[in-house]
Amino acid sequence: MAEEVKQPTKEEVFARIERQVTENPIVIYMKGTPRFPSCGFSARAVQALINQNIDFAFVDILQNPDIRQYLPEYGDWPTFPQLWVKGELVGGCDIILELDQAGELKKILEEAVK
Image (tube, rainbow, N blue to C red; front, side):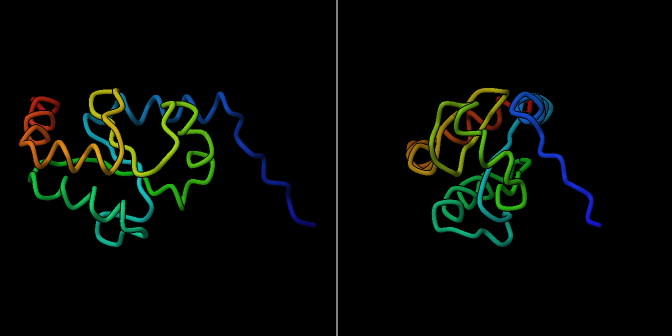
């Protein structure tokens, strides 16, 4: 007989997200991994981060369906990827690329890891 898998509660998932965004100065929630992104938006966003040569954490939401379900509500942002810096939501792909083109992304990331 198969054992029932207990789904985490919304509060448990929110607590896990809270830990991830506060324990990692820079974290991107994306589809796939930096080496193998699973959508074009995640690919472009993560490439902009990689180009800055600053370490960052990532969470593959395809492997974490509970985070995929609740992160849009947690951050009040409906889409992926999502870039979080020092516990604050920076934004999604378009915002990341705009910051990169304006030369602001590197400054934000450097400040986060000081």
